[in-house]
Length: 118
Image 1 (cartoon, one colour):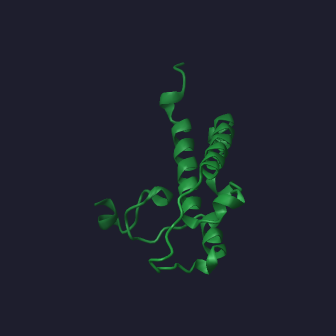
Image 2 (spheres, helix red, strand yellow):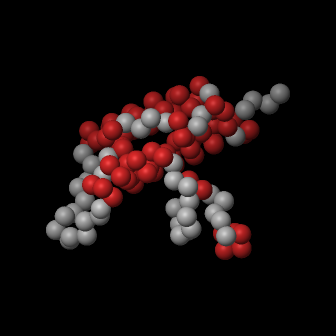
Image 3 (tube, helix red, strand yellow):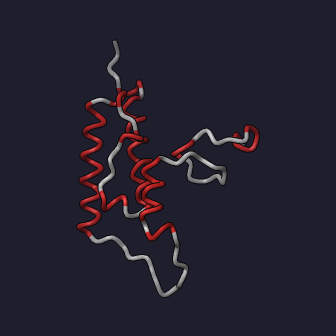
């Protein structure tokens, strides 16, 4: 409703639903251009392969490393400064998922509910 009234989406990078233009992080744009030139194959014979256990473990370990860095300085974290590992950068969808996850974690780390009472 908010986006229909105002003409913009307040969720920005976290938005997964509306069809309005968003400023995409440069990492996602680079990933999109590097993965087969942004061309999508719609042939039904080419099915998306599921990630292997080692791929999932590598992704999980990478997320944990970045979460530790965020916890060290949640206020100084900037999603635009993240250098994305090549195995994530190969997929624009995974790149966006990764950046959204880090942004959400940083937002939660900054929340006053996590801060001790003075």
